Amino acid sequence: MDPEKKAAPRGRPRLITQERIADAGIEIGLPHITFVGVASALGVTHMALYKHVPSLAELKHMVAEEIFRRWEFSLPKVGVQESLQDYLVRFSDSVREFAKTYPGVTPYVIRRLVATPAMLEKIDAHQQEVAQAYRIDKDQSRQLLATIAFHGLAAADSVYSAARQETVVQTSYEAETAEMEGDLAQGMHALIAGALLQLQLDPALKP
Image (cartoon, rainbow, N blue to C red; front, top):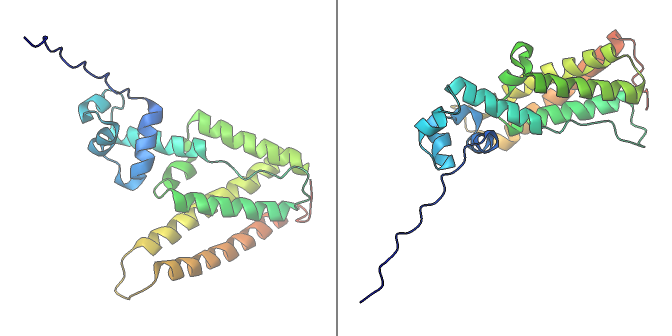
């Protein structure tokens, strides 16, 4: 007689953590996030996910916050005599790339009133580091970086949203995007020069 077959052990239920939710949301993309989609990616029911996140709006905000947390700001380079203007141009390039990499994140980043304490703390630390590196006032650093981040994110978001739109004219996404990126970069250079002039800061200032 065959030995009695033991029932297969049931697998442990998958944990629903904020990090796993964020990973799934980032993979799906903010514009396309749904409860069902994220739950499916996690291997759970959407009702199980709902117990951890009470609304779709909060789900998207959670993902946006995690995206921002993982964003590594371009910092002044230690031991490199990079002018303040050149650093700000490099920072604006990273802002543009951030908006390009994460469609839909801009509204969550430029609206200061919906920023979480963790997001504000990260921004403040960045402003302080730039102020110390270039020996400028913290308020001057705040104005420079906030101006570049706000306008850079808003403009880049518009550029890449426009590039993704269908048109009646046959165009190359790569060629059209490259052309608009060139215009965006030129505009950001002008914005940086104007911001430095307004604050009466020397563009050639080095650490």
